[in-house]
Length: 130
Length: 223
Image (tube, rainbow over all chains, first blue to last red; front, side, top):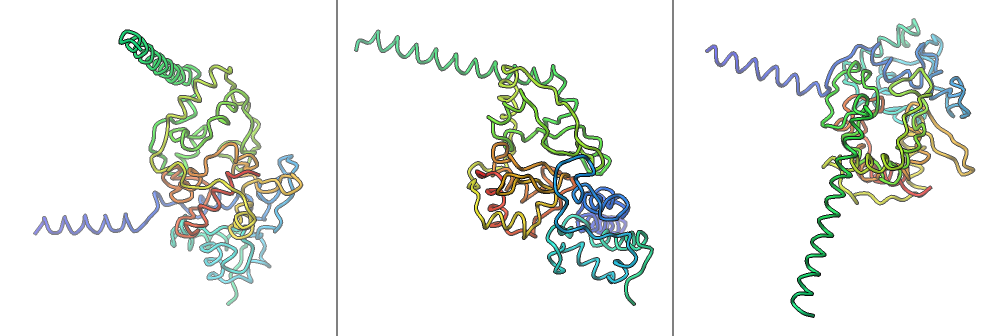
């Protein structure tokens, strides 16, 4: 009996571990600092190094499309949580925006992307349309 | 030809092969020794597979991993770079907040050749030489810029030669001289194998195999 319970628990743990798909789970804030800041900047205003290389004294043009300002209540309140999830998962092109925003659906888990929406709502201090 | 002359010729051939093998062995041994003596291992990992699992692990790394250098780089470029290093990623290694100002140590011409020989022995079986045709083309350029937006993080020169693009990924202006197309393809196909934690998204299952080959060929093809 105990042996069956042990095997059952092992299988559940193994399934959860495999289904997770990523090597580790990070908080939305950590993920933002690692991935999103590249274009959106550390304060979320869309002024990351890829968007504005001149900030670093480099003679390169700005990104052709300004990355979304996540701190803008006006812009972000127009997007529903589903819009944001879709844009992160499938990239800009999946929501008829620029391909410069890449798809993160195979990098972040669904859970991490949902958490990211919460983080973005903190940055804009706003909610999506009701 | 007499038997003795054939014997002498065979002995000379055997001796030549032996000496070539020996000198190559010495060169590789010297290259590995030089790599160690110069302290390169302090920043560069030469044994795979990749072990980093978290952001913290990744951010602890001080330099690019080299355990698949022989699959990734073109030898002529590698040897030249070791002698005359130039900046490839405009942001500091692993950083998204500081400009790259590092002066990478330079090796002498002889050392560069030896270390280059050694690094070229470090290969990954997942990279299949010849699996990608290194060529440019408008279609592949369109994939790179418009369809997949790689230009957001990577620099390429435009038609007039002016550089454009993002700076958090390596500058790809001279990737045709630097990288093997087969490695770029293998990297796109299974990015986690080479870099389990990195700032570039995982495109496996998003970009088709055909487009991955086209992108790898474009990045490493003639400009």
